[in-house]
Image (cartoon, rainbow, N blue to C red; front, side, top):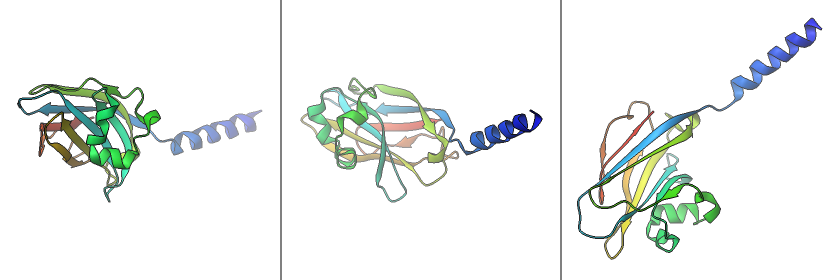
Length: 156
């Protein structure tokens, strides 16, 4: 019986040490003030080479406009099953979108990047409005966007 308990303890410890852990990440996207409709945003992960890996959040509920989020749309292939449940309303001028989600530790400090594509109806689309390495060191530090995004911040 003792041997069985020891084997089970070793097996459990081994299984736990190989599990991938996740942590809560808060993504905060503040938009510039502009005249126009609400912005559609795609927040997603790419590897160090810029290749699409995973969708984190989509702001804007009319999927017919998702094709204007060009970097994300190409990478994700607009697979509807992928973003079901991770979307919300568009974000209006000067407002802030805050999203909390669980993210695997394997993405942090390993060369992955957070990207934000933005688009506003009848206005310009912004592929790579924000591109920031996903590092512990960068957490909590605002990054300026190149389009409709004024600042983007992530924190653990």
